[in-house]
Image (spheres, rainbow, N blue to C red):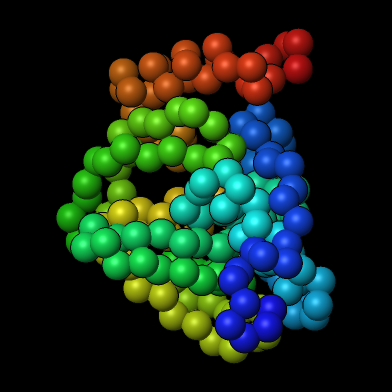
Amino acid sequence: MRQGSIPGSQGRVRPLTLLGDPLLRQPCREVTDFGPGLARLVEDMFATMYAARGVGLAANQVGEPLRVFVYDCPDDEEVRHLGHVVNPRLVEADGIVLRGPEGCLSLPGLEAGTERHDHAVVEGYTMTGERLRVHGTGFFARCLQHECDHLDGTVYADRVTGWRKKRLMRQASRTSWHRQGPHA
Ligand code: ZN
């Protein structure tokens, strides 16, 4: 990406992987090639995230089982956080646990109260291989935990419990995009 250019402006909007697709359930592979293919993937991920009006996106949500995510996400103080992380590791997730509304581009149109830590730190690399450390609080901490979950093959619905879980899965089963079950 050229300096000063808007992330995603050179990218291609890719189809989103939706709940029921096995790609969302497999842990993603570490990135080993930090070449132009990775830069293109990050650019496509920004384009796709913005087109879908998301605040974060993991690579397996656009069909690439690689450990990469992008974000453009506010925290609870309305501070904007914009960036990407390659081979992220969630090194801290602590502070109080809050249940807040959470949604996902792979479960479009749905949301459910989900418990997350209020503080998170992710370490990883930029697309050019420089070390990176990202701190988040509030809604941005939620986003960091959500994207790290994706790369491990987990979706937020897995963390929803009780009646919220039942309601979410019932709503999911009624959507046109949901293709679980024997007729998949
Ligand atoms: Zn998601």
